[in-house]
Image 1 (tube, helix red, strand yellow):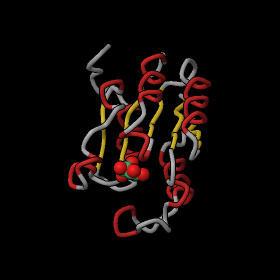
Image 2 (image 1 turned 120 degrees about the vertical axis):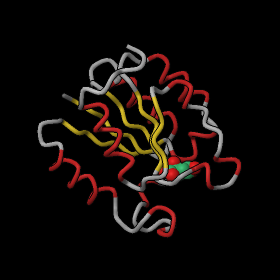
Image 3 (image 1 turned 90 degrees about the vertical axis):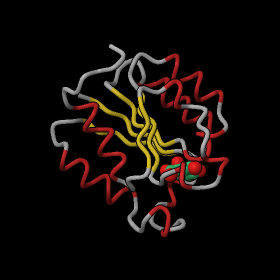
Length: 145
Ligand code: DQA
């Protein structure tokens, strides 16, 4: 099984960026633990601060991989281009957020992406990623298949 994790803008700063919101662990450290936990799964990771590069990566893997776990950062709230991209893919995309965006500023309450994703996980810290991978790797009922 192959799962692609994609992080958008400013998420390369995890561990340093607003630790009271996003925690003090770097994504690389967390990813090593995830890879141990899901040893039988190919977990690939990509981060970019550039919208078009996120689209390029999703188009590259979206017809081959079993799922994408996407934290698009602030593009979540603005990007029709990412929404169109998610709609065009063959594999499921799960939208994740480290923080509970609904507890934060109002502009974070709306996602341009949720309507194109199979589901959304937000507010569990870095564990939001693990919960998404659990879903993709276990036999939970698939609501849209
Ligand atoms: C975020 C929430 C977004 O509103 C914000 O712009 C981010 C991170 C999260 O993981 O909580 O960059 O996606």
